[in-house]
Amino acid sequence: MRKRRFFFQFMATIFVICLYLPILQADDHSPININTALAEELVQLKGIGPKKATAITEYRENHGPFTTPEDLMKVPGIGPKTFEANKDRITVDVE
Image 1 (cartoon, one colour):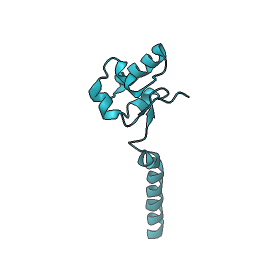
Image 2 (cartoon, one colour):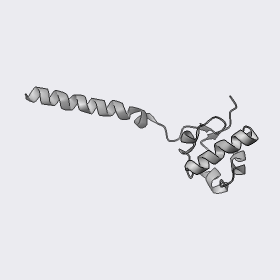
Image 3 (tube, one colour):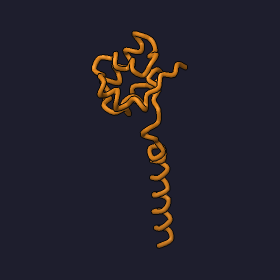
Image 4 (cartoon, rainbow, N blue to C red):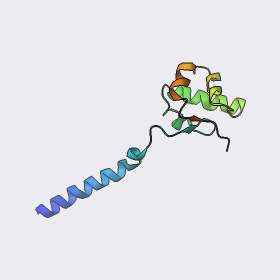
């Protein structure tokens, strides 16, 4: 009985680790391409919530791709402080 209990506890632990492994592997400092990122990805940037993320995607759709990281400040609601906090994580690769 003890072995069976240990086995189930062990398997439950392995299951939880596998469930959260993608989250544990996520790199908080991986670059985000603001020309292709979805709103769900953009919210990973500092100071960017769902509304600003949507504003970025809408701006991109209406005005075309960003050509420089600094172009992000053209989006209403995104100023120099937000840009400075994220400039090392922003890329503008056109795919």
